[in-house]
Length: 325
Image (cartoon, rainbow, N blue to C red):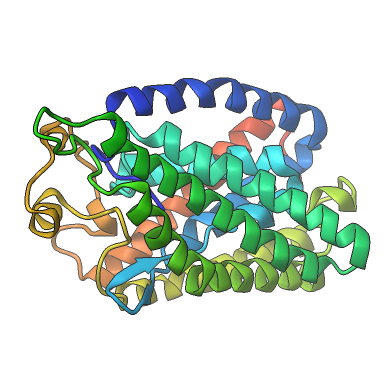
């Protein structure tokens, strides 16, 4: 679901980049107003769950892969606007450090994955919970619908590119696949395997936190303690050590091929693919000289550390540091 560099036109990237500015400003204000200062660093921990879930690539027949996001999970724990900030932070780190998603496409990726997904997911979660009083069932349904809403937005953004941007010969300048291809191709995996993975991650982590760290979320008061943070840290460590399982999946996610692979599939390389490319420090979560599984775990640790640091600084900026002692 991460849109790579050059699949969207600069105009499309610009529109989504501009659109995300007021969204992120509003999200920041809502978090500062609604989330107790003591709980803001815990949003970083929740963001780390999202970061790690996106490292577990899951294949489907046909050679494409996908992953969970856990955006609805964060919305349930801390509110949808906190989820917007948390997932956006994860996407920025993925793009800048690991080349996972385009830097120019960050606005579009944040809109789809960090805004549409948790907003839709939380809305459906609230609707189901109000009618069933079953948090886990509501979380499963909400997370499934939220992920697929984000996938549909991504498919539409891919599919309108050849309609709007093509040369005199009719060849697409950016993504070459029309809506008739992009929508079914994107939705097939998300309606099946990756939607199921989103439900599994969301419900599994939520159930664990409810039992092992019941004061983790925003609706459980302002108090934080070691009993709140330690179980979450243990689960993060387990998931980080397990991330190399994502290396088992072969192939790329749909719409995330390199220029050469795309040219082989459609018979030409879109002219826009000769554009700007960001040089990530650890592309695809690898590092020269390290075995891939070690680099994957290192990437997970770096991602966790940065996300926790970012939200700890936000918490400090608001009032005081949380006391986990």
